[in-house]
Image (cartoon, rainbow, N blue to C red; front, top):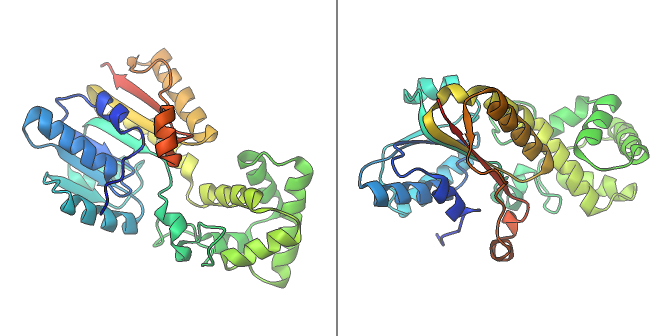
Length: 297
């Protein structure tokens, strides 16, 4: 497998203390950040680093296992198919009660958009699913079949920049159309969108809103931020990479409250963003924002 350079790789390694022994990679994906961190720690310390991989998506975990085996990352590993916010389950599975470094990279893996059957892409024809964990919870198809006008309007108000008239038009027409035929595939939704003059750019925003809602992405982030302090070792760090304004606002406000009310050190007073060279090299990095905080006591 050709090596992909993860977003803000050097910035992650710079924030990783050399004496780190226990790492929580809460958004494993393909494992690119994991590979970099373990290699960095082993080179600096010459001793084994323990890492806990967490991802809700079993497909991602399987791919990461293949990549990390091929890359000769030979260290003690625990693999947990849970949300990164479910600390009690992570502790129960791994026996690890504290971590020296926690990393969340909240980017949605591009493989999700390349695999039609996952239902994330507006361009590929597949089942209208969009769940990270396909073994639990409602798919978008199931949710769309029972949602109501007010919920749709609320969702679009929260996660789009559409005008109120457009929000109500989209929600109303969607409810009307599903009475005639259930929405089951991505291309069926795309055909409907074109019928009411919704272009692909706006449809992508609608898909993103559905994905965030069905996976409870912001609720998971908020729950993590409410609980991770108890699982972070004193004088060690939590690093979070966000890619859209809703996530970044939650992280920024939460960390500010920690600094104001708890014993925290602001590792980077100014948010870290990719250089223009990285943005040119890796389009996925263009909207990335990286915030790191250190637990003082």
